[in-house]
Length: 66
Image 1 (cartoon, one colour):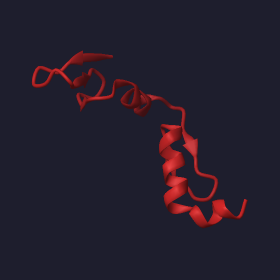
Image 2 (image 1 turned 45 degrees about the horizontal axis):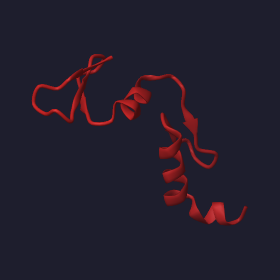
Image 3 (image 1 turned 90 degrees about the horizontal axis):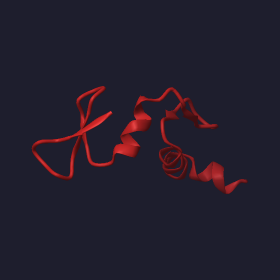
Image 4 (image 1 turned 90 degrees about the vertical axis):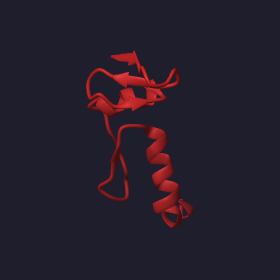
């Protein structure tokens, strides 16, 4: 799914979308159908760690109630 980017040894080019990325594992999840849903708003994320960051930043007051 990835090939080494010619411009930088630290970057990879995605064969699906052409985007150059440094973290193949994180980018791979952007192409999967699995989504993590926010329980408080309509936001969805392809990675659970991004959802956790969203919850801490946008819904901190709601998290403190639990």
